[in-house]
Amino acid sequence: MSTESCFNCHETMQRLNSYVDRELSDFELVEVKKHLDDCPPCEQHFEFNVRVKRLVRTKACPEKAPQELLQQILKSLKRA
Image (cartoon, rainbow, N blue to C red):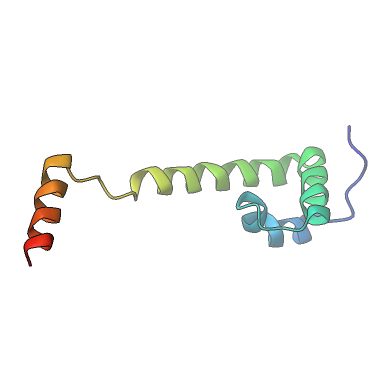
């Protein structure tokens, strides 16, 4: 068990997206991690957020064009 976080559930939830994106200060990162380690409901919310972001990232990424098409486009642009 880790030492108790100075953040409560509300404060942790306010920082959760920034925590997932690694946009918090070192102090905030440590405190959110401590809270998540000691609070199963917040940990579940965190895991859900991570899964949603991963799903969006994999499903919303544009498909890459075939290399042959890219080469044709580049040739056309050079001629223009």
